[in-house]
Image (cartoon, rainbow, N blue to C red; front, side):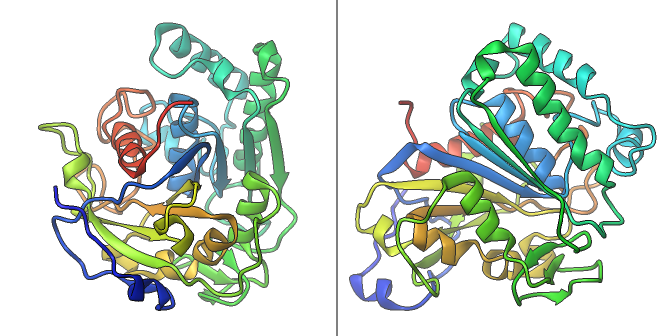
Length: 339
């Protein structure tokens, strides 16, 4: 496919948007494989931990905002809306670790030892009425149990951040709706920079200071990255944010930012892409941000969620998952390669 060539002048336009081209491919960047990570909100958080466990050699860190532990739902929508949202009955981290170990032994997810040295950041608002705090904290317990079960994971770093007062929303300093409300676009003015917290937790101190995003947003063809003959409930187009330095050839990381249910382009426009706050920090850290997009697919996915309960098939949380295979293909198209 034809790559989109950007004139130098376009790089000087603050947060310019590349003209939507349905056939556009992702640009090939100079990607640092040690700085590829995944972050997600709600259903996106569940998807993020699935990505990290299934492909730990690709995703070297994960940020989970308003989500729970790996494969909590276990291919059951009933379990998803009870155990994995309300915590009634509570998730069983020890059983989920055993599930992960069994899958790793069969090659259904990546070798768990590959998680060594990775970082996990778990953020949950104290006023969240959708995902219970006990469910979010079960993610902490899952990773703790995993570390106990796999001695090689002593260097796996897990940070719990549950001290902020916000609801089921992605928290920002000043963008979005009232922080005390729950509703689209699920971005709240909370006086707390959630995107900044994600970057600090996953990548440490910024490379340089940036006040405003000055890179470029591009739409790209998501269908071109699908396995042949497969439907992943993805939209035709996704979005990628490209810092100017990355476009000029600097060695850059990649953060995959996964929206929540009803937070995709078709539902809220570019609110999550522009207002969540990732782009400004991307410039400060030399990190390209990939914003994959889902779509509604009936009957299993009426709210355009990422698959964390089995609507694309029983293998949704493994290396055979069509959505996870797509994510790896997208990161590879951007320039990821093994160490």
